[in-house]
Length: 290
Image 1 (cartoon, rainbow, N blue to C red):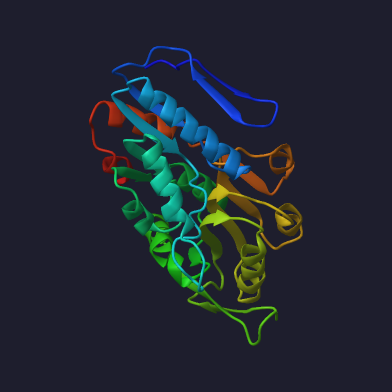
Image 2 (image 1 turned 90 degrees about the vertical axis):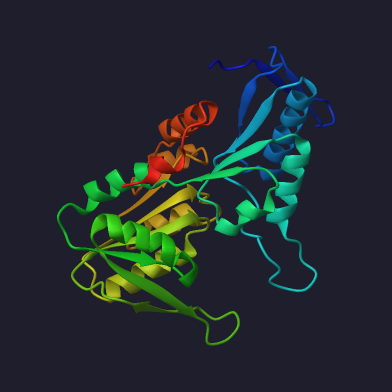
């Protein structure tokens, strides 16, 4: 495989100009682009590259999207709101993608929003060694920050030979601070909060306080997508978290790299191996079998 030469420029009014320099006719092409901030710019760049490759007669075009933006809007939660995850899926396929590879979708059913094959990778092969190095031989409790993440937390608990706990979040009244209750045993254990993404870090930091109050010896968090926007870094630095482990599906800022409570591990090797297997028509699921 080779890295194709391309140029992405801007017109004076901000419009994006894409040109694929190398010949891709009949090729098996992989386009790597996270749709992180600025999400709209990155999505538009991806769409234009896909269209350019389709018009250049590439045989197969795989959109490799380590972080799939707009995934949190995957259903109607109120009247007159869009299902943005479905809309973005539609325009990616219309743009020319004949296959999609992504990592740790916010909801697994988003795979069904695409009318092309989707490979949803998991970050456990790169996160698990870091978690094990942090907890050592201490008994571990894996904690899901909400009911929707139980399946993910259970998978980590199995690999760590750990107990499983869930955080029950409740609001007494609108706009009041939510009450958090721990369901499960964390006392005397190193607690590992597992989530797919952390944005402003409000939930994970509040959860860490509740877990320590419940008798845990330490609390660390791990996530695949470190969005870390707004007050996230300040909250993490002043929280009970010992460390937050995340991946580089979203390119970390200098402030994130400089924060001594955040560890960033690379998914480059995992994605590269998945690309190799797709090109050679080999199994992807076997990457995640214990």
